[in-house]
Amino acid sequence: MQKRTAEVMNIHVNSVTFSSIFGIGDTVSTNQKSNGIAVQKEGAIFTKEENLHFQDYPIFKREANWLKQKSNTAIEITKHKDAIYVQNSQVIGVSSSSVFQVGCIDKINADSRIKHFRKLRS
Amino acid sequence: MNIEMHNWDVNVEHVKVDNIAASSVFLIGDNEEMALSSFFDTPPEAFTIGNIVPLAP
Image (tube, rainbow over all chains, first blue to last red; front, side, top):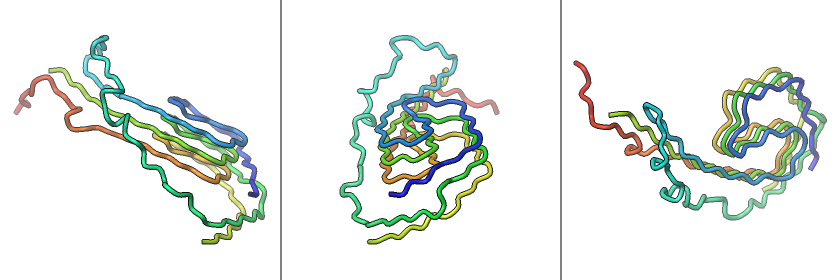
């Protein structure tokens, strides 16, 4: 597979969180998983017993439906120019099993699950 | 199925991205295979209010 190089003049990334990857250069493969429960609560006093647990919610146990069989398409790539040019790139956030890659990356495998709660005061 | 791909110039001046979240990818380069899955859940009952406060007229 003919790989191209990426030429980026300047990059600005603010935050990379929750099993995310900001990669410069080549990567072979990634395998990322992230589970999150987001609680938005009015009068934010978070006590111990109000903690929520992953095992209480089926969303974190469900099987992700990945593609069953690999596609048997023959791809023949010829590169006429060697590089990809980007002048400036600006990213505020890379979060929950995401990837910001400058360069080649062959295989990416990412799974993220987020459950939201909003609790308003009576 | 056969695919023949010819890669010529890629010149980008400026990219501004707010957020790359929930198993997403922002790639400047080549790739062979991506398997991305994301579950998101905000059920109605997740929105709880103490007791229903009547809105002022």
